[in-house]
Length: 382
View 1 (cartoon, rainbow, N blue to C red):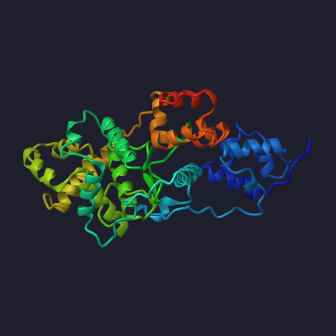
View 2 (view 1 turned 120 degrees about the horizontal axis):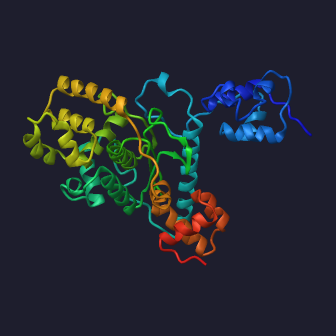
View 3 (view 1 turned 30 degrees about the vertical axis):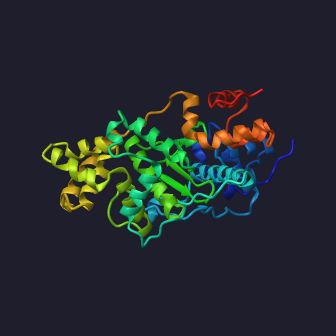
């Protein structure tokens, strides 16, 4: 049996990269400690198992020293550097998967003579973000008061996501890596990202976040597309003092979701209520912190009122934060893959432009799962 010599520091690095120490993997990879201590060498098959458990590309383990893994997009997160740390394998794998899908869709659209989307990178930082937020709202065709007429936050998020896809932007919401429920995405690490492209722009929202927060992240990442500044976002609940780009996108997103005129009309109706921020949030289907920050920006409350509420709300949210999981597998694919992208892939497979193996790889669905999802999209597969 052939054994391979792997530097112990690479084995430790693979564990640390995935958020483990060597002892944590004793059950999954029983001989790992012996490999690290150079008491014996792993077989290639054993090494493949370690790579799978730690979500590490196998080839990395044969490098003489750990590679410096960098984010493939600009980092706009407003959390402290100490909190960011090294990007997790879950985040990196998600970014690379989304970029691969985007590149495929772009190529497919260009080959079919599609026109580039005029709104991509149509705005500049010097533009008034409120005006851009109103333009985004017009482009999406959202009527005044639309969110108040939607029953739940879940319905509002779904409606906004479908509307965004309707103008040609891939809108993906997922709280795990692909369909792997054992690889949960961390809200502490990021809340969303935008990948720019004139033909196939993409916004991604961390589905592990609260529904009310997802609503704002969708709008925020869409503002990144309008601005033409792709990157990773991890804003700390709209606290003042972020980067110019994040503050601009926050303001445009706030005007998109909670237009100034509507906020000023509703505020007198709820201002004396003990739960005034929550009531305003319910009307616009945003988080109460977003509602409070919107009032602060419009000078309807002062900074001390905002920060007092912010501290109480965040403390309460951290104590009781839970995220619902599950749901219908095929309904989940509408958000995890997105109808816009999936429909193009299914069509290409039906027309013979790509093989079914490539279609499986692009969507993350295999065999019968792909066939069933395609049928639910309306495709008549053989």
